[in-house]
Image (cartoon, rainbow, N blue to C red):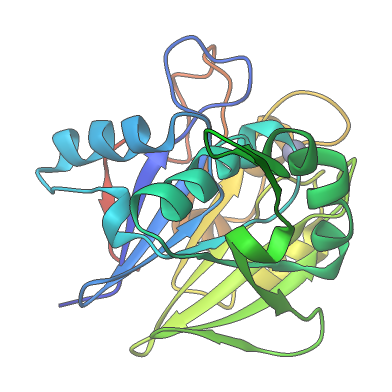
Length: 245
Ligand SMILES: [Zn+2]
């Protein structure tokens, strides 16, 4: 079967109609989640209902986090607990050293470091929940059938865009970024480019993408779009859509 990109969520953090942006990469039964929004099992089920697939967390053992903003990672606490309690295993967490340096102490430690077993408290660490696999800024990583390079974007916090190769096809995903023509060049090596758009200086304005040359726009789809953007010269990714690069 082909390398597939399943759109789990397409919205921004303020959306009242969409789940926040995340992707699920699939090849021959191997799933890699790219970012992890709130209520992740609901998000998987909703997308699965739309595309006719049975998607559940039991099949997702690897998640890549592009950055620590909540709309991209709020679900990771629940996923970590689910793997720990329901599956008795650790989530393979693929991310940069920049994210690793803050994700436990500044995001997850307060709710996750202490568990009550009915008679005593127990202290847990990041490594009790997560099998950390570092993504290097200068080296290609292998995750299952996927080869992944990352590139730093222009955003409030350290964020990586990804270029994924699998089976001779490729995906470029911007994650969150200000408009950055050099990043678009990097991503344009791919057969399919999924690019964010939103308001504000740390995101990419729709008008800047709409003004790109036809060759760049032809392979591009938009994600992380505000609810108000419904009509676009670059097609919008839809929730539950399965894209084949
Ligand atoms: Zn962000």
